[in-house]
Image (cartoon, rainbow, N blue to C red):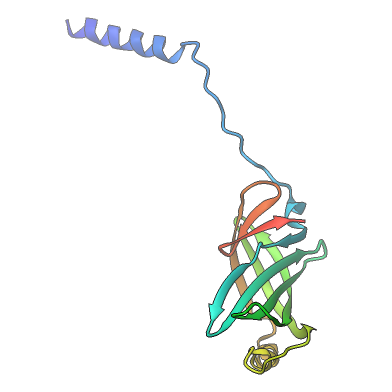
Length: 164
């Protein structure tokens, strides 16, 4: 009796494994080494600070030669919607990709004004000081987690970017 049950179980296992059921494979996105190279931009986020409305837009440019240009633009408006100006900060890195991480070493930064600033409390002077201070940390390493959503969308450091 014991042998009959073992033989039936073995036959059921063989028949079950050799059935003609078709299994669908999920598409895995494989991206070549140069998939990250190019310009990526975020849709931007809006937030309020005091009586200011701030729109922050980010752009990451990965170059084939191993340089990364990371930029942020800050647009300011008052509560009534009047334009108070716009400025940016740009940082230059050396980058390389290891698995699902981007390793970037800081090189330099710069700050500039796009539209004339019409208020004194916008934080431009403070950002200039931070940029000058950060030059002391040349060579500091930053790790950002990378996830390809599609070939045109990525998540880098928790921020979603779209390829231009």
